Image 1 (tube, helix red, strand yellow):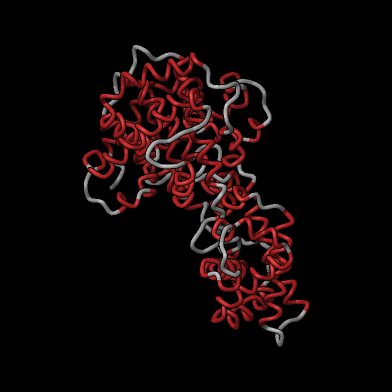
Image 2 (cartoon, rainbow, N blue to C red):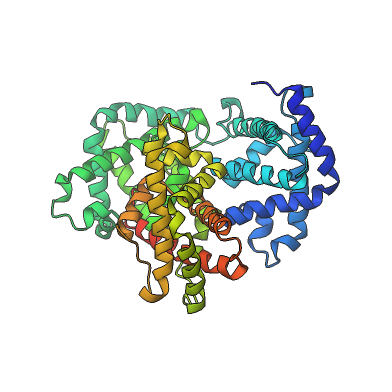
Length: 480
């Protein structure tokens, strides 16, 4: 659907009304982003080691005003120019910057929500569903253009250092090995465990297994997947100009390896085992040049995974360690009083809680198998209603028991099961953060007359303890 003259008028009129306050609104825009996903502040080098409050930081103020103005200016020009234009930079440069920072789809969604809320606050007398739709459309066009530049670059612009000759060595040997990937994958992992027996304990499905490693069906499947993924990534390196992995993302691999506690030593053992396995598989082709080509490809993959293990999103896992000092009686009372008030309206509040999550980050709908192909509107979906009520009740019940039990307790399930479920769904720090934000906003809306900074802190601390317990349980399910 085109960006019409009517949409343009709505955007232009509202931008003209708020332009003079761009500095203040830009800061509010960014503070709202950080309120929803605190870890996003780690995407900005000038904020990482700063001890200055965000709302006082001069670098953030300048950056926020610049980004807010650029975003709004881009929207204003969309209908007239017919394409996305950004001032003081280029879309290509924005794509490179966002790629380097590790910006994900969830980040773009949170930014959209924060932008719309900020503009709504700036022009409450003008705001309408049509204006919201116009700004949404303009933002989506800008993001689509940025994402397009975040895609793999053409071969002419590649600079991986992985040559065509090296590609030929890797491709030729992989074509020979491919049909035997299952056996070679198992050999690869058995070689790892021979060098470092303790590595088997990194895999939950091996810890208490009495089946010998070479007969273990779960290990066989996993080994074939990892071996094939590693080799496929090597084969594509020269052509794509960057590391690509099938059936996964580098972000997820980084998260998984980080959660499992993988160290540099583990990567080195895997490298040795991989090269030895390939050498054994194609002895007639093996030579120093082939060895170097595979080693280089593996190192590129490892570097990419390790870079994702350092991302700001994962570094904030410390945020979810058990809170200290202990959950006090005063905090318990604040949680208990508000929960007692809300309890009779749990089905409605649970649904509001989830709809708020989906409003902020629509892509999270895809985390739920029962929603992926559903043709029922979210607010009418009976499965979502049931699930939302259960999760909201469990979260709140856990909060009320925290001080008395002295630990996180969840009803009708276990922390271990929650860890498994959340791990399989691929939940990241950003998901926990926006869930936290949605929970606090839902409770605030439910008990406005009771709400206070102290109550907000009590509920936030209780949620952080629950999130910490789930994240700890997720560590038991590495999938290297």
